Length: 316
Length: 316
Image (cartoon, rainbow over all chains, first blue to last red; front, side):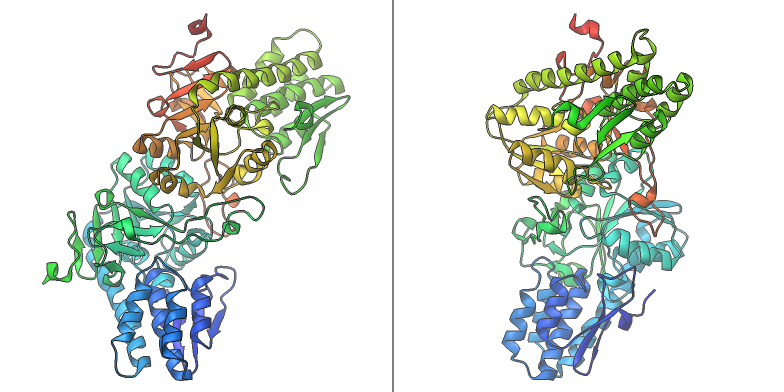
């Protein structure tokens, strides 16, 4: 697995990140020299995955401070980069609230996300049992977090513990984060897997070859409704139909207690040319899975079950 | 729309077909000069779609006769081209049973499929009502049939009758028959549409933007269980969850009364490299939708409803 600083790091005058658009073909680093360049890297998915977007935004604010950029302008350009993952806004608020050295707080946010990933993976172990065939969607691995990952971190940890026999990685159209990034990470971790078309998840379930569905999240409302990569809601309905549990693994930085339910989560619509350059296309990047279709949500605090109460007080 | 002979035709010494692998970028004809070349065109999806595969196989047998090829060998190579669409085996059996000029019978099979498409589209009109938003999967249009199509034929006819407001065309991974072929046909027919990722069908339904799902079929068992392009079963489960009817449109040549149910329908597994050349992949090309999830099956004989009785006697 990659070290956190291989995925993203703050240097003097630059945020340096592994360009995820080039993986797995090439391992290329991208250096961003302004908040606007970091925002562009987020917008174009050079860095993606909710926790990693948050880390990138924090580093972007630290970078702006290093260069003496206008703080409000830097914040605005980062906040406008992508709308759905709340980690972006959470990280900007954390930076707002910090009176000290911005680089210090940004690096601490990264370290905290790495530690949250580790704790989520340990908590999630209790949801696995020997020999499981697990299906996951998009990429919720190290690349998405700067740590060991959320869903993929839990899967890899469970595989180390002898609890995962095989993984189905949805290719995840249109940008193939599953076929490119999750496959690459599972290969590096030595976890047996096959890539499948997103539309083959239903047949794979009907064949009795899926015991558990595990995904990450981009924003979780107070009641447990969860926005994640387009197709997660599809999996939730299919898993429900086949009696297969669906588990969400996401850090507390992905929980948005300001939203009572998922109805108000903004769903990013991306360019239809990601699907077809020739014909009209609709390209929503996320969907919202109602809490009723979610068996458990794992955060760094533990395993949450319905009815979800994601307020930190619930774990006091 | 294309004329039947623009999609596939028998000439002296050749079966000439529109190479569907090149669409929509280029309109190129492929000439096959032996049964083996026709089989290769079927295997590699230069011609695809259950009814069109049947027509191609019939023309392949006529071509073999023209060239004086061994009849049994020609039949064997065609029968081995693809396993799921029963129209292939139906057409070969029709050719077996014909004692006259093979070209005459093959051309008659094509004409019959064209006429069946026309009749299906007329019957299906009764299932549409004004303003419908229809979702379809893969390509069940003229290209798939040599006529006006099954599902797409019905949609285009219903649009002409003022009953279809908009179509969602699933892109249909891995080979994008929806984004390439259905989109091209809908554009030519002047039907408003958008391409969506297969995994976006669930969200589109949840948003209340789908009134009806219509697909073709590759093989229908006696009880109505229906094999069709991978993802059709996904749509069936999703449509059921959202209270949306699913209608199958397919000619009687797609019905396999020798199979009591869908459990024995062979599901073609194609090369995983269609999904990813770098990582292990599983690539089933079809799935089977249980009859219980199908609202109606339209054949040229009329509209069949559950419990399905697809024997011609049922329409005597």
